Image 1 (tube, rainbow, N blue to C red):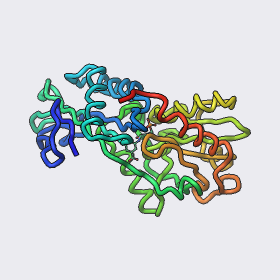
Image 2 (cartoon, rainbow, N blue to C red):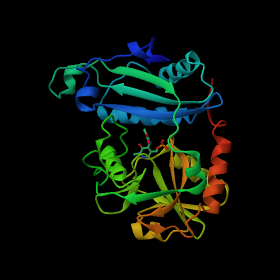
Image 3 (cartoon, helix red, strand yellow):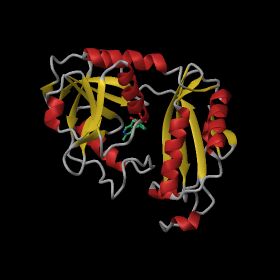
Image 4 (cartoon, helix red, strand yellow):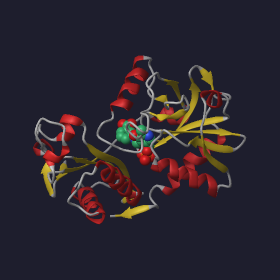
Length: 287
Ligand code: PXG
């Protein structure tokens, strides 16, 4: 496996970064998880735009234009001869001293691109649907650490994942600081009620898969809305599913012990999953 490291390709065992990198010392940096399907990097421009928005807020200067970053990603896929892939782009602040001040690491950003495979959940979960719970850890208050930032500090989500694991679940709903449903640890959430698809308007990452599903739903003539959603609404939904680059689209059939409708993946969920599979290799950057 060849890893892209600051403009060069190196073997995995040589893809190393200083322990003084503030990405390691403080989680100071940003990342993206992207998928390629059949030689097309799905929604690459959108992922790059989101990455550069996070970098802009972090005031982290990277020595690559967006176009340069796209070229580097495509080169990494070609170098590794991958037709389908999961791509991780990591930009960290770079080497500084032991203090947290990013001014000490100006101009040393590290850029890493890894192209590999990922299977998040077993196939049967996509057929039967998954059971999830709500965990105590709240999603970050946007005015403390905005969930829109795909930063290298994922402890908020990791703490929630630990709670899910401790209770024997693979994924968990995180509420926002007001008690409304925000998202899951690595996925956005949708509910369907009376043929209307709803997804939280606040407290969540604006997922790219989520946006794709919203437009696929509109194309299929369903109403969609972003709104504040309570757990009560989730329990009493007709259907529920999660979206994310890694998970793609996965049905949810039980939440906090409550069956969602008859406890089977719903018809609109199945239709959206099919529609999603149809667009993945049609919408993005070819290589
Ligand atoms: N919410 C959060 C908090 C995420 O991290 C999504 C939603 C979905 O967004 P996209 O744009 O991918 O549709 C994400 C992204 C994992 C894993 O191992 C998941 C993500 C990133 C990295 C790892 O589950 N999800």
